[in-house]
Amino acid sequence: MSTLAEDIAAFISHGTAAGWSEITVRLYQERLDLFTAFLRRRGCARSPDVTPEDLDAFMQEKLDEGRAKTSRLGLAILVRTLFRWLQDHGCIVSDPARGLPLPDDGDDDLPEPPLSEAEVAAILSGLPRQSALDIRNACILELLYSCGLRRCEAIGLDLRHVDLTQTTVWIDDSKHGQNRLLPLMGTAATAVRDWLALRRTLVRGPDRGALFLTRDGKRITVQALAALFGGLNSKRGSEARHLHCHLFRHSIAVHLLRGGADVRHVQAFLGHASLDTTKIYLRMVPGRLKEEYEKAMPEIAVGAGP
Image 1 (cartoon, rainbow, N blue to C red):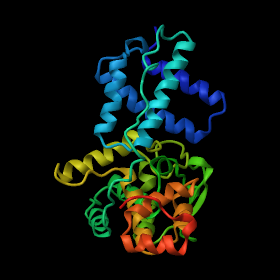
Image 2: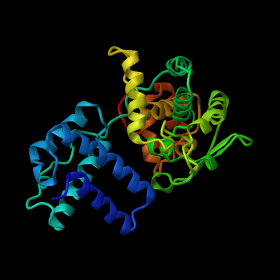
Image 3: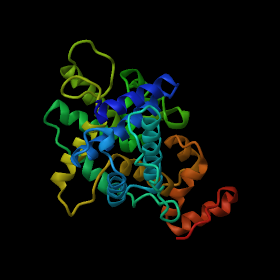
């Protein structure tokens, strides 16, 4: 009988054959890797081992971690889809996700409070830079913040996407197809130059062109990024803000708006398909600035509380 991991691999292969985009496949694989690891800790080695209680515990863990409602909604829908597919293909007799509730805990979440500019500067300047992996990690964090990258975008970057002559980064397989050209400035450009000077030391065998490599010479993975932040948070201590990829993206969005950037420019910078997504950040800027936006651009006014 197949293992849970093998069943999930078959599900992903089916989706790939059905025409899922590369970014969808990557996103689903990342989410299901985390899901599989959680179930393994609960002793679920095969798909029939999974119970509704296991799924409820998984969703509760994501809530306890502070995951936004939209993120948890995506996870719940994916889990439902997976187990429905497993039942349709005879891998399980009954579907444990049939009654899995979709998150419904009020209005859409505000992004968590951003880091301040001073906090970001302190984090970046305090990173170790003793080894090639240290330099790689510093470069990743610089780009997560200065370019507002999603985690999957950072993982998917290739050498061809970075142009140090033009000081730009090209994002082309982005979520919602919002491809964009981003400026590479200041310490971020320096971090990329430093990393590229050492990247070759991690290449093993043929160079496939991934920008960020693991110590084994392969493209960096979501697990490697999780380990990066796990180590960083461990050194910062339990009392410090918990850092993760999207916190840097949220922070630059708020910093740009507080600095007077047009909300439509921030939308393009972040690669949001809808302006409504970007408007949420206006609820996190000072009241006077929000009022100025509403007065000058009533068509984007934010009907939200303080």
